[in-house]
Length: 47
Length: 136
Image (tube, rainbow over all chains, first blue to last red; front, side, top):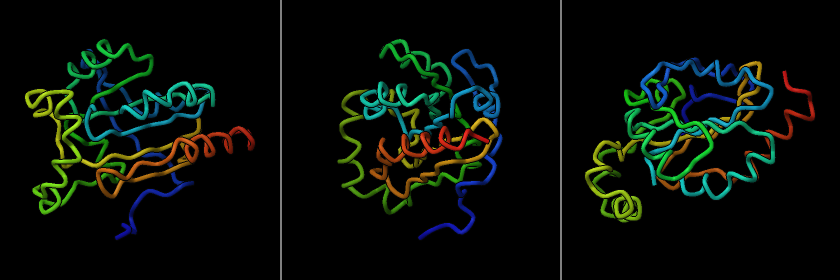
């Protein structure tokens, strides 16, 4: 069943904080400010 | 993840910056990156706040206890071992997003089950559309 609140193309990408391998906080918005489109892939697990 | 590694050259050639978010702890992401010699950024969202913010759900309990679910996960369990998989949340679902440099979503794929993955062609198509319109 489709979630009516699901993100849609054209909406702002949500901001969130994640961590790099050293445990440092990284803002997702810092990743999409370059000169390339960002392909953000959330995986279920390594495999 | 295996599909990403396989298609990375195509993704790079399409001028996409690939960043992978995992539900594993930060230390595990480093170990995985080193072990597999990966050139792209892997970041940790162990508390899954970003997963929730991007609307990524979890498999239902019924789906989780279904033997077919475990059968599908068997290859990664065999590859990683039970101990290493234990810090993964096998019920967490994934998603794929293309975001332009103005912070606008240009492609959205929210997985509805464990095998629901978008094609690399669809992702690259969305990225090419951004360059055609000059981004935002």
